[in-house]
Image (tube, rainbow, N blue to C red; front, top):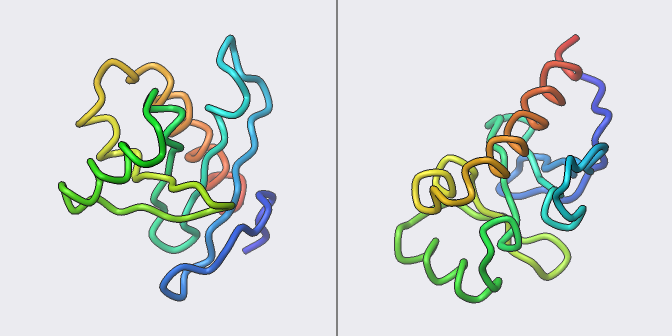
Length: 109
C-alpha cells in the first residue's frame, strides 16, 4: 500500500501517518493536523483541536482509558473518543476525520 501521508512513528508495531491540512476552511492549521493508524484506521486529533492544553486533554484521556499517540512532544487522541467527549468541537473533529478517511481511500486505491 502506497501512503501519501508522511510517516510519523511506529506505535505498538503499527505505522502512524501524519495527515497535514490542505485547506483549513477557516480553522488554524495547527488544529487541523491529524495522525492515522495504517492498520487500525484510527484517526487521532490534537489537544488543540479540542481547545484544551495537552496536559488537560491527556488527563481526560487517561481517566477514560482512551487511546492516544505521542508525536513531537504532543499527544493526539482517538477522534471517536474526542467526538463523544467534546461535542462542541464536532465540526472541526468531523472535518479532520473526513480528511483521514479520504487519505485511507487514496491509499487503498
